Amino acid sequence: ARLAHFASFSTNKRTNVKTDTAGRKPNPRFGAVWLPSDAVSIFANYSDIVANASNVNPDGSTLKPVESAILELGSRVELFQRRVTLTGGYYELTNANTLNTDPLRPGYRIETGEQRTRGFEFDFVGSLLTGWQTIGSLNFTKGVVTKDLVTPAGNRLANTPARTISVWNRYQFSGGVGRGLGAGFGVVAVGGRFGDVANTFYIPAYVRFDAALSYRAKQWDISLNAQNLADTEYVRTTSGRLSIRPGSPRDLSVRFRQRL
Image 1 (cartoon, rainbow, N blue to C red):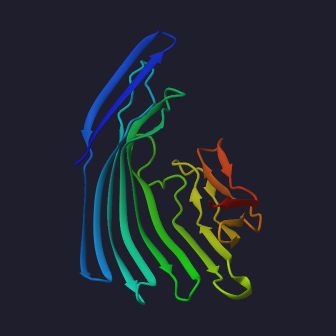
Image 2: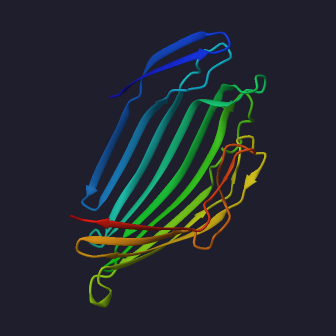
Image 3: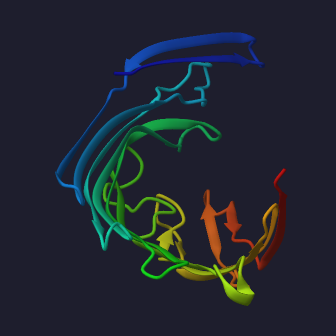
């Protein structure tokens, strides 16, 4: 059982009018897990979230908080003496009092409705061979506007790809000449998505390759990490046509750690 307390304080510098607003709202969280066997678990979660809005109206009054409800249903299965774990689940996220640009008052926002995201997610974590670990994730998502005074209902949400796939493999040598040496390679594939909630422009899909090389000694370790090996040009996220953030080009970093 949770209770959210939120408060906003604003001052209009043109009129020197100060506005203070505060409120409370229950935001409970419920969860249940059923274990039909040692290797299988079935779970269900529900949670309310309240996020206070920092935007204000021209008169200085604050907007209503964004209210979210999250529902998740799924199952987890462990195989091969728990060396492989498979997780699959359905989720639904509903946001009420969502904010959009006010078409009549430039520079201000209005609470214009509701947005909903539904999807399926599948995760894989396994170590079938000694020293080899694989982590994979597959996500199918559909995010739409369900109620709005400005945006047509049914429009896709911004920066919400229909499909996302990621796979990471890592091998750690445990003996012989390569003892202490580790190597990893991964792929991230993100589907196309709209750049704004009005669906006026589209962001193309992209595939990114990452890698890592490490060495671990008794009291220290060093690692070389490479992100976007192919130096692919892609858009990471947007906040509208005038705020498009590209992904990082090829990025190399070295980390050294000493254990005392």
